[in-house]
Image 1 (cartoon, rainbow, N blue to C red):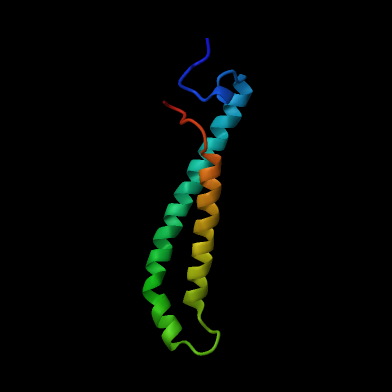
Image 2 (tube, rainbow, N blue to C red):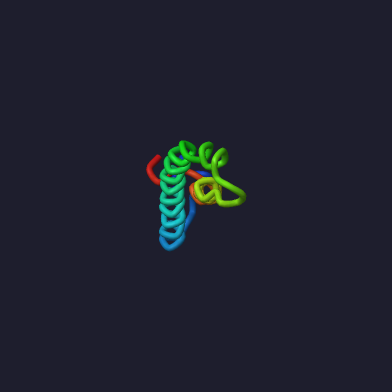
Length: 92
């Protein structure tokens, strides 16, 4: 008898499919963790971005570029992690 607490598409999976599903969800958790770490880095970089924009001449604004890269990494890893973690949790 299938486990009724699972979504209908996950009720009758083979062991190989369950392993692939668990791997996908673990990878999603890892990406969400990376998004959290880079969020902390981006928040710390905001301390220098204002000063960098105010006092750096021309396009020589390395902290601003680091901040934008960190925000891009956060966005990509957050969306990918949320996509991979979709569905029911491993332990209901």
